Image (tube, rainbow, N blue to C red):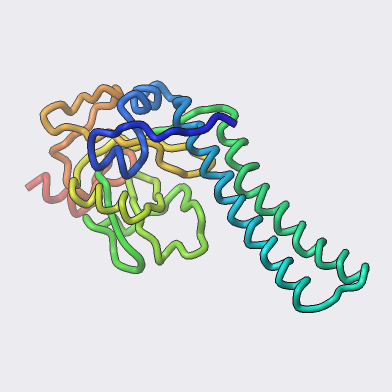
Length: 223
């Protein structure tokens, strides 16, 4: 496994989401960079090591608490090995499957941010139904990002980096992991972005999927 080394990043957004200009250029071509592949793989192994370490500690404490027979020892090992195998499949296995194609998807539009049970800001349309929510467990207690027809889970640093700069973005992500790998803010003075997607920056904040407006906004535009 190639070891991932953190490169120098120029701004808060790049630091929060762990990408560089070079990574962004690769993502704009629809593929992961070598650095991003190494980072995602390393994160998966780190998670696996934490789970296996916790299971090993549980097994060690169990052995200290009583003197198991051979049958008890076999049962204990079975109870520890099964969760370890499941953890491997959900971390390294899932990540390796996603990285095999090394493809990146893009979604564009106005960003909406929320934390926990609080509503999104700016407000989302009532009919918003995300394509993929990622990890459901504990999702409502997390920092969240919604854009177009996608919803992502964020950490605190990522949330703060985006909340300091609301606006229109191109968001690049690994589809099967539903994980953001880079972002590109769309400059209001340059609506035709380098990613090749025209964006109407005069559109109200609560745009819906496909760039259509809801009935209320359409009525406002008609005057």
